Length: 324
Image (cartoon, rainbow, N blue to C red):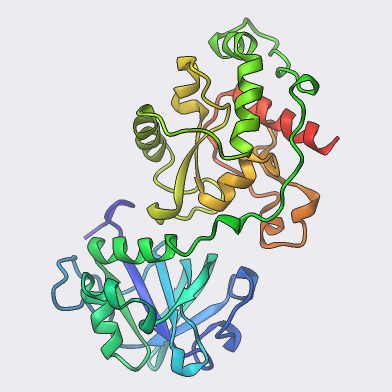
């Protein structure tokens, strides 16, 4: 049976921190510790816990999302990361999965921390009884439980780097394209001051929720395949719909070509103009202050952004002004 991205099975891997974690690192302190590393799992097929109703599949495949739990009795901290399977290497004793797009859980949690969640998750109940390394298929219901546990542990201070706000008078609209003016350029010109004010409010997280946001998010999720355009993370609980040009009342700013889907921490960096997308190359550009962090490793990644030219140029212009 072939699965679409929406139906694609996910897997929870419970591993020995000393024997099975990439390079024997059971307690990674940065995503790079596991990125492109090999995690070992038993040769037995992935289990489907009793009470789950998800179609079985024999093997992990390239592109599958993985939840990685490092056994607490082997120096691990429990749920430690999510990743994407870059390569699956079968074997008789141990099989190996190469990891990409590793995202560490900010506050790892073990079995002792999730008693309430186990009541609603057959997977977590079964895993607690399983003392050895194993792989499980994750049903949609179990996925929602896992994603919520992870999202609840994302601290508000996840993005520690802040910049002083740029006074509105120092900003200017994007340069007009060589062709005829379109409604994007007219909207930016007519709402320029409101856009700048909204951008500053957005940095302070002062913007209020609006009824139209749900529609905007749904449309953006479909447009971007329910994945962060930067990290390709597909865990919906940590994904947010971003307006490239802030919403100020003009309907053009609610168009899909003003939208990105971003992981929560990436969204905050984007709103703070600490990262942007180069309009010509489509590559991610990153502020110098992030150079030696995990975010610095994202610099140069080509982004399939699907944005209109005007919002793309506008954001990149503000990124450059913030550097000046």
